[in-house]
Length: 385
Ligand code: P1T
Image (cartoon, rainbow, N blue to C red; front, side, top):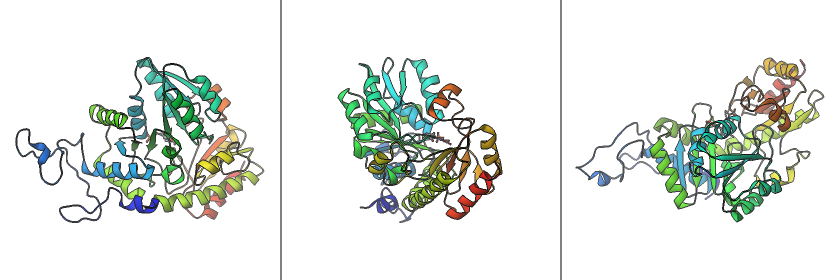
């Protein structure tokens, strides 16, 4: 089945009791048991005993998202960060993780300020060069954690090359696929072991819920992620699961339009005299343009650009009328943000500047409004610099 068909049907068979076409929101905390120790056989649904452990709405979403990434197992969490945190529970004290040096600021914060307290070791390297990954691997490396393209400077990593190097060393590869969605990139097809998403973004697509997901094929790792999901309990609620499922039904259509407008916005910015640099893998000038063209089905709606100073960035961010100044991305509305003081404030200034997250950097999540309206708004804001 094609992607759009899978998105609409996988996990979403009509409900058994009434034939409801849309998966119901099972808003319950528990399930009646037939007798002591006889909960497993109750009714048509087997195995439902307590709603932290199992919920049919969440199970439907997990099946749907696993299918979209071409995975066997999916686990939905209360946020993207909760999904990433659960994934890191595959690594034990004394073990080492190699991480893309540019990730979402919250991922960097979790790894460098929280998980290091539990004797997990991290090295942050530019994973766009596979030799850096190879050089960072140590005897105790158990995971390579990638973001591609990265948030916000859109660095692209070769998923196949890094997976080969990591697997030779006995390490799992995790890819945060939030910026692309499974419509534009399917990391498991390149040898990646585990995909994580903030479903808050493109998968939900409507800026109305926070969530996360982990999908994978390895049975043993999946059993452990499921065990963590139940033991630590950072589950996605039935209503939020339902919202994400509603989102994925239109994912293919939405991503086509995000991609189309993203390319147009990037091309417009590249020609603009007030813009010093554009970060977009769809641009022929992007250092990994050829790789992005092979590995991705499109380039998506995330574009970053540098206007040279904090004052100029402030002018743009405060002059837009259609675009909304806000954190987050992947929704129907165009969002504009300032990574240095917003999403990446937890990365120190020196490191930010090394990565290109300067005070003049502006990030746009190109939404689904008419392309001309989005460009017109950015144009009038830039003209005020
Ligand atoms: O916000 P949450 O659902 O917990 O997801 C965290 C997260 C994980 N991975 C990536 C690539 C992300 O971009 C995010 C969240 N990002 C933003 C809020 C942002 O504006 O970039």
